[in-house]
Image (tube, rainbow, N blue to C red; front, side):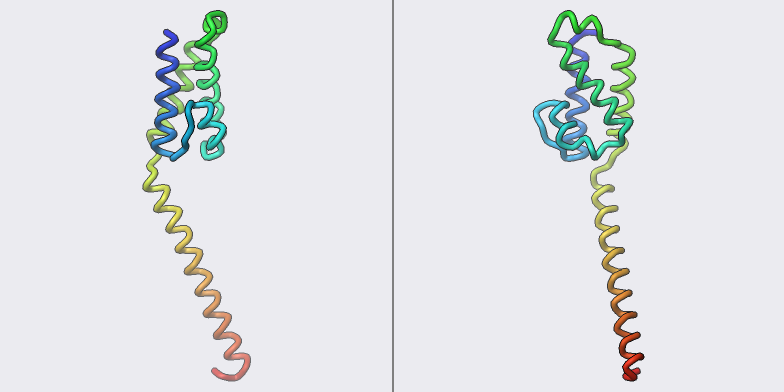
Length: 123
């Protein structure tokens, strides 16, 4: 595996993180530091491995120590996860969760007001 392809893999994952998760940064390592917590632990571990391999590409002695199959598997795992994410669906789910919470609180408040009115004898 050429050093260029490892760098391209890291750039592709970094691009998907920016596109799908809205995480900004100069490199994959920066994006993992800023928003890695939005990824599941297993995916974050694989992305970190890919980031370390991209860092080692610049050193000829370290380049020989890279496990190409492992880096390729890490890339495939990260790619599969990030391509499956839909930013719009996540945003809609978050909005629906907030809307449900507001509706529940309004219902609880209405029941509390009715209970107080009944207790005071107005109903």
